[in-house]
Image 1 (cartoon, rainbow, N blue to C red):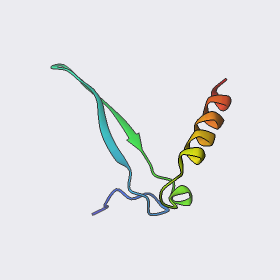
Image 2: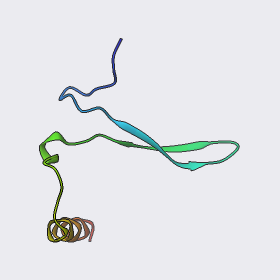
Image 3: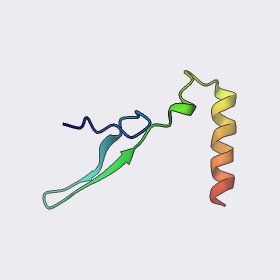
Image 4: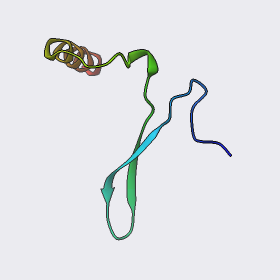
Length: 57
């Protein structure tokens, strides 16, 4: 039986983001092992956030 892991070994997480009596909406997060290096400093988080905002603009 499969454990749900992707080909690179990352295990996706499913989180409910909206729940009602008739339906449930979930989001899937597949972790990127290349980016899992531990904690980020506040400055690193700010740089990453700004980069994401620029990509979306």
